[in-house]
Amino acid sequence: MATPAVKLYGWAISPVVSRALLALEEAGIDYELVPMNRQAGDQHRPEHLARNPFGKVPVLEDGDLTLFESRAIARHVLRKHKPELLGSGSLEQAAMVDVWLEVEAHQLSPAAIAIVVECIFASFLGRERNQAAVDENVEKLKKVLEVYEARLSQSRYLAGDFLSLADLSHFTIMHYFMDTEYATLVEALPHVSAWWQGLAALPAAKKVSEFMSVGAAEASKKQE
Ligand SMILES: N[C@@H](CCC(=O)N[C@@H](CS)C(=O)NCC(=O)O)C(=O)O
Image 1 (cartoon, rainbow, N blue to C red):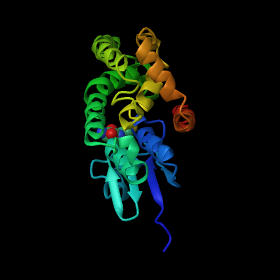
Image 2: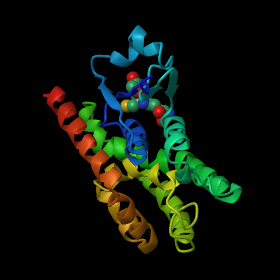
Image 3: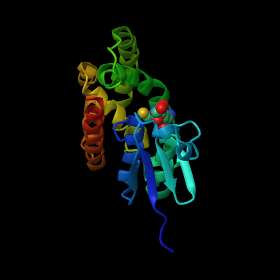
């Protein structure tokens, strides 16, 4: 019996969709990116609500398994195809991957997303930038990045001296953040800056950033 096709539903411009894409690219498996149109409301149609009752993307179909939430999708794909990226070598490594994935989800990403939404996506959403929201989140992010600088002066990657999903999970939001004028916050921190450059140079990250650019070009055409 042929291996069931893997399908990812969503738009690649979204950092959560491209987080799932990055896991698929790292896994090196065949998959199909099924395009959806946010402006047309595809995410609210009954066939998509059957995949994700919250009406969001990304959604992954892997044979009979249907998953939503980008980090859960990334964990599943890597658990199946590249478990070393989840620290499968030891309980300690796996625990440290979990710690820094939580840090990404609850400390860094909320502040970085708020800045990226205002500096990059507000225009796609047809509104002005809210500078007060940017300033508040820049202050939060500065404090978080100081912790990252201390951590990355002790180990090459976040979970230890091995690349893991804890690092990869940062890529897509950081990719946008580094396109804002606040990239200097990262550039001023030598260890964070070297870590970021290493992440951005990964072949899978380069491939996903191409998907993100195509997604951005399509979204800007739809605004015209
Ligand atoms: N925590 C979720 C977030 C999902 C999410 O907010 N997706 C956005 C991507 S742009 C979405 O589907 N928005 C469409 C909508 O809210 O109508 C994840 O990591 O997958």
